[in-house]
Amino acid sequence: MKKLTLLICIILGSISMNGQITTPAPSPSAKVMQKVGLTDVTLEYSRPSMSGRTIFGDLVPYDQLWRTGANQNSMVTFGDDVTIAGQKLKAGTYAVFTKPGLTSWEVIFYSDTNNWGTPQEWDDSKVAAKTNVQVYNMPMEVESFTMNIDALHNNGATLGILWEKAYVGVPFEVPTGEKAVKSIENVMNGPSANDYFAAASYYFEEGKDLSKAKEWIDKAVAMNDKAFWMMRSQSLIYAKMGDTKGAIEAAKKSMAAAEAANNADYVKMNKDSLKEWGAL
Image (cartoon, rainbow, N blue to C red; front, side, top):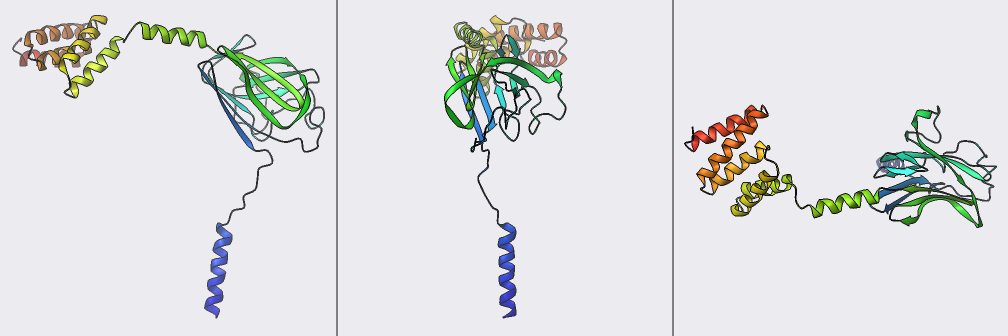
């Protein structure tokens, strides 16, 4: 009987130690991921609820720094450099702090995101951008604090903040035009010398179609006549195809370019190959 009692105590103790109580968070976390033009934007924040309370001017005092939500500071991540109120904001993650007012809010993008709430010591050098935006009174109440990315268009969007009957929006611009033009130019210009070199090297190393490898390496060298490493690959491809004369010519050019660049490794590799092919 004593053994049975002891066993039951051990089992109950094990259950007690391993058990974990799970309850809903009073201010659940939220994450919003949005493509704006060609730029990735992510919001991470917590969502307190009104729960019968008066928010602005009471729970959240006017004209005082606010974490903009609950728990850890709300954060926004921009995948590219953006512009806010004429201010350039580098790609990265920023805490979003605000100073709510009756008719306007100051919205601050702060480079230090390692805060629980507002920073203990404010550092103006960490203010990446700030702007004042108008408050709009909504006809209905928003029970849970909300942040969103709205008013989407190719070149920007608006970071919205909604709670109680207040709405503020911070427009921002993204570099869609610049990225689109660069992408178009890259495609229209065709593969680069490095693209041709990579394709030729892969075909050569994997023993695939050597005629294709030769075509691509010739294009790469034609586009960059000082790339001794490309000419080195060109010589090896020619040699593999049985074109010893072409291999020797390419190796000599590679060695000369390597000497000009003070690259002893490639000078030696080319000399060894030239000896092997009877050119030295």
